[in-house]
Image 1 (cartoon, rainbow, N blue to C red):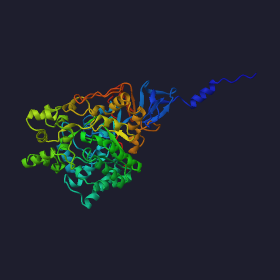
Image 2: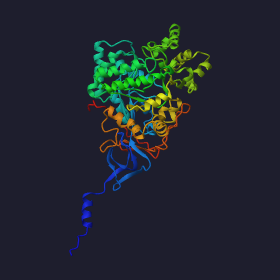
Image 3: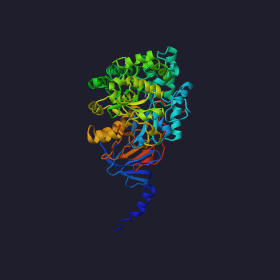
Length: 557
């Protein structure tokens, strides 16, 4: 009988033709949630350079770095759809508060944006800085994003162009409509911003000067952005007394401009308005059934945070901060403003009345002489100063020469849970990403700065079981990436950028509270941004591989 030839020469030939694959990193043995909403699967993920190179059983491969993700979830990096880290990242590019929650993309642009700037606007930004000081070395939004990238940031960064910023280029803080020539120039600025990578138009219609824009102006800006694949995202004109009418405006803008539209921090603010949530949801559902692309984002708390500008009529704020404070010093105007602050109105959004003095916490002052009031409630400060709450608000704005940063308790827990379950709900912190150290400790903040995403995954998904984990991850990753047409982001797919998070679903937790907000989240173990490891076994590596991420209309050059 003829003997069979030994196999080892053939195996050697096979191995020579097919050497054992070697990668920079393999995340092995993880429960993989790919960001599409599909059920998870056990598998490995290989990273080469900035790219996901392979997904599956990679037990035959080798890597320079091995991360064992046994009993851990492996997902795409999370997207913060409403980051306010524009200044904090200039101070500390590590973005520790966000990275510790698995956030790998921060998106800016609620109403105002870091460009395009006129020389006057650059000077104003320089003059009005608070605890963090920085040179304003850019004029366009693209220049700002590239400035962050060059300085070094751990997260990726992107931005909408602010409707108020566009308006301010032509009208400053004037409370009037643009003429046709000004509107044309504003539309041109939008087109230029879209070609430089803006994701769309962001508006905030309760603040001056954005509040001065009427619906036709916003439609024109959105029509300029729409051909570039842009999106309209808005802090609508009212989230309280005129909530439903304000929602109608967003839906109308979407229909007229043929542009997808997103609600910033969807809510029903103020106890008398809590019962409007079902009507708001029905209105959105109706628009979606009619074919409009209407979606929303939210933060996972019952309190919001902004300034005392949201406690005064926007008319008194015309002309900017200096003129606003000058008017408040006029006894006649001051008396009228106090009267309006105390009177329910549908003409402007009054968060002071919506929350009440006992439910407002002061979190940030520019002047060192007022920082001792940080963390105190408005009612407490008013009692200390022997003034009414309304007088106290005005006095603090004048003394601090700022809007003063404050927390307003406005929403119901029932509505927060109802919103989380909506199929079109994504998430945004509406806060800066900070570190519990240095200059950041000079002020307080809303706990959402450190806990928004961990709170979703820990409290609402694991503990409350509101939605399955794969659905929550989809809402944090693939869903918003799809809305914004982000290239190769948001899902774990071969060829996509390697923004990857490893976390423990059993332990992920927000630790920040209203009383002690500067506390990092726990439970996120490893984070990769563009293939570089930024978080290793829960500790920041110091790596800053974040990049400027541009929208679908971007034209390189």
